[in-house]
Image (cartoon, rainbow, N blue to C red; front, side, top):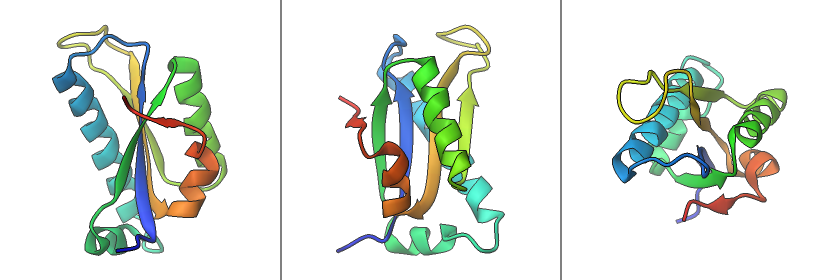
Length: 120
């Protein structure tokens, strides 16, 4: 099946997070970006749900790069959220951990994240 839409989740590679914490931060980014897109009546959020909710999880090297991609997505008019940790478990409060972009047309997300590597 060909997908028209996708969502991108960006996680910082420089943070030492347990697998569970990393997954939780990615989930926060995914849900947050979806909710932001779904509030826009012109969005493709519902179509993305029907299509199967394609996601990619990508790595960025540090906070500076995370914020850069967040801003680039916003500048292109994509729905994006920047996740800041509350500090209850593994990392200090206020640590920016993840970005969620979309759902949006796959080619539009690729304009921002196309050069990033899948989270390894």
